Image (cartoon, rainbow, N blue to C red; front, side, top):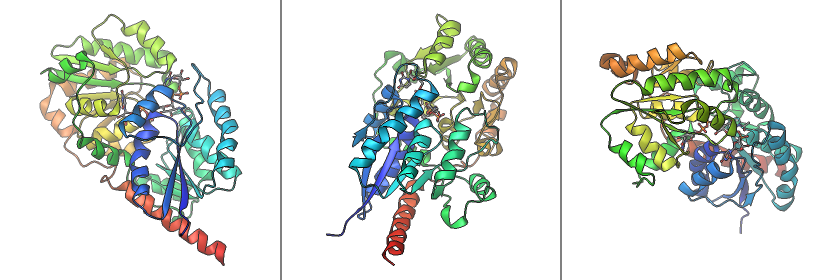
Length: 379
Ligand code: UD1
Ligand code: UDP
């Protein structure tokens, strides 16, 4: 029997699972490929929740998360655990996604073993090495290590070409987050939390919030949280905030919002979060993936960051960057909540992040690449 190519898909956080689940599905449809799923479990709880939603069982689990781990801890733990997996598996291609510690450390580990690397969601740049921190540099370093680059947009493709990546190693695919969204729309869901059930049935305007970026910790995050408190006092509005598990985020949220009107929830499973995004009137976030999803769902977004590597969301009209400015955030939210004409202008555009078929393109290109490599080696 012809030997299949062994493609290792590596992931460690919630968003990586969400964005790689459709890629795994697409690989599994190709008869020439066997998929090995490797998780670092950099996010133990949130990653596991996402694995459950997509019914993915990892073949290898590095279980690196420790409470309150530093960037040194997480990166070095992954690097130390990888040789064990690489000794057991004969991997033909390592597939990583995005910009996390897992992305970078798994790409570097593959390189040390001379295994080619495919980078999903390549080429996003702010060109500011500290914004987002440390993701901008994780993504750039992964780009240096990668053999195949899958930028989601034309802008990301241009940035890769500008950095000297060869055109034949690049395929613009759209973002696989849109494919994952499509996988959810076919599922019905009962909400486990009674508060969420009530909010889903409410006729008030839902302002959905997520925040977790390291560069905001301290005064920036404090001012954003104060703005949310202000917004929660507006009439006819419910601010709903599933709080990220990073303890530094939780401490500040507890300090500023506990006991107030903002609904503080535990992180939601993706199949609960998607219906909540659909229900939301407005989204306030510093997340990367949610900027893409909001455009696909035609929801206006206020980005609580100083820079974004997804300028397409702003250019398309859905998003607005307000930094950590309390006054600006509140006045942007008020305008969207109170001016219906402006609201409709903000969300009547075309989604710039893809058509929901990105994963098929990625899987097909990887297979083509592996066949070419084999031919070359055979010569
Ligand atoms: C990480 C990624 C970030 C990504 C984000 C998505 C890095 C450096 N950062 O940030 O790019 O946008 O995930 O959410 O890779 N924790 C738990 N349970 C969980 C998850 C986290 O307890 O399920 C706590 C742990 O104490 C952990 C801390 O959160 O030490 C921080 O997690 P970590 O993965 O280091 O970084 P994030 O801030 O989540
Ligand atoms: N998400 C989720 N539950 C939540 C909050 C977010 O499933 O309570 C999903 C969201 O739909 C998106 C992803 O998690 O697909 C974004 O993750 P996060 O904001 O942690 O990371 P980023 O996208 O910034 O890397």
